[in-house]
Image 1 (cartoon, rainbow, N blue to C red):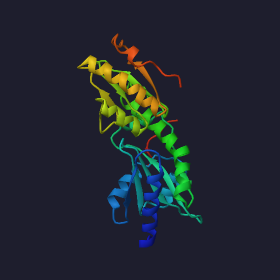
Image 2: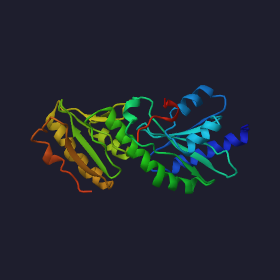
Image 3: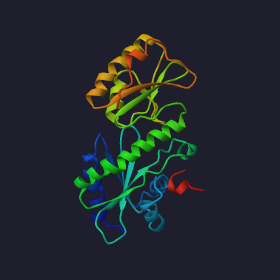
Length: 252
């Protein structure tokens, strides 16, 4: 049974953890009376290992959800052993179809000690790196032809209609893209730059390169299968050298 103190500890831990993770994260606590939200959340826990095993024996009574502006989410839950600390797992985006997950390994969750500062380093170096990679691949699968980005490189893909699409794994890169005319689809997380004005498009592609480079991120421009990029664009963005799954409760 979760008393008030237990809920406060989880919420406080999650708040500190969110503030220590790279990028911008916010934390939302789901108390025991948020039964519908907890049920829906459990259905989207992206794990087939430690956290899945825990949830199979101990259904969610409370949780904290850490959210990033690009739609990425992590869930922090209680441990049910003799050790202090919590379990944390990735959350599968609800908007993407199950088929997009089929070839992507689960970014399985991890156990955290009772120190949110040290745990933030562990999450950033381990779970978050694997989660960002898996998210990029799932988004790629959901919108065929868009090459997944990496943590140190933003991959932009020409689309048949002349637009440029990308799925950066870092919200800092997303902010730069939006500032130069890209529009993010709230469901898929894909950023799209219209090709209606090719001069403005080429200028935007030239300008984002140095700004991303300042963040330690390279850029690469890829052609969608069956399409040749306009002659004005390749020079503006030269390449920079640098098991089947569904969310736990969705498995059939």
